[in-house]
Length: 271
Image 1 (tube, one colour):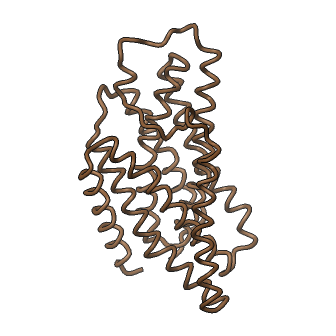
Image 2 (cartoon, rainbow, N blue to C red):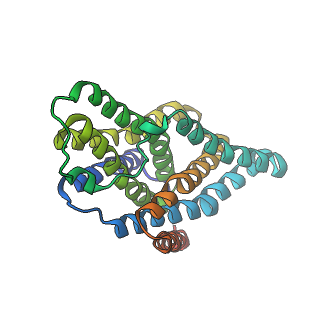
Image 3 (cartoon, rainbow, N blue to C red):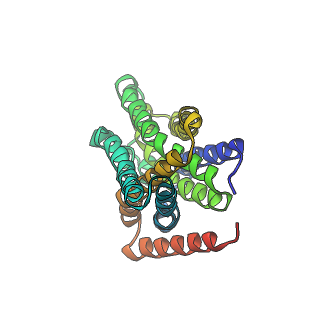
């Protein structure tokens, strides 16, 4: 059963603003909870990978086959899947490595004795702002995917929102740390990181306004395929490597399997 537009938007807003949870962790915590981050990132990856193949790509094939026939419909679904991967890959490609907010950072970096000098603000502040902006740009398609996934089915809306929200927590830390060193202010680091998460509901609004006049079975089929591609790429490119870096190999795998199991149970629930 699809969710109303406003409810889907609220879920996307929650997922995006969960960067603020990461910001708060960086603001208040003294140590990084690496086990939690490793398990949660693996869990998010498991949920996203499972739902991408078992629900979104499957729905894409079914829908497009119904519109175009088996051969052409399957081809369009396949192209949509890899089109989603290409979209997020291009966004990543245009992010300079030294400004990539997905580089892992640790809370301990904000508690070192070597504090940033208060007079080096102007030049480094630009760097911090660019870092937050880069994350915002990267989060646009994620917001669109979360919103459209929520629009599709109420059963998977909450799990997908949780998966994206968990994914955004370490991003909040990873933006807060460089912004803190750019400005020398924990408050600025918190708010810039928090506000960068607004890109996800913005992506939801853009996606809805642009696509709503054209939403039919053909467009939904293509969108489902692209969402599957976006989520699979995010899982393999960001979540699993980050889970490995924050914890041990088996922590990431335990989280991955748990995420798949939870999503499998959710999909088995009657609609």
